[in-house]
Image (cartoon, rainbow, N blue to C red; front, side, top):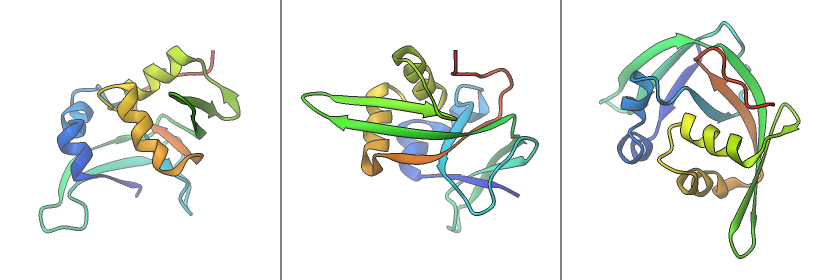
Length: 134
């Protein structure tokens, strides 16, 4: 039972609950777990995890799960490089990935992942037909 919880910050600032329920946020990026999420798993989305106000947002099926590496380089401006299953994606794909992950803009996405760059984990999607590797 892969449970996916979303922070209060992302629920409020980025409206993740609304975006999940309305098909705007179609995947999430997470650190690798001991039990890796795989295609076919039922995903359970929650807000206020581990609080008395816990609420199940929804559940759906995992349609794709791939390895992802996010590297943010600090120069005059932050520069982001993303690899999905070892393949580098281009700037337009990075923008689409950030949007599909529910962030309001690329800057918010970069700020979020800059806290632990390089980030290595898994992109977990619940909508069919999404492919960033062209």
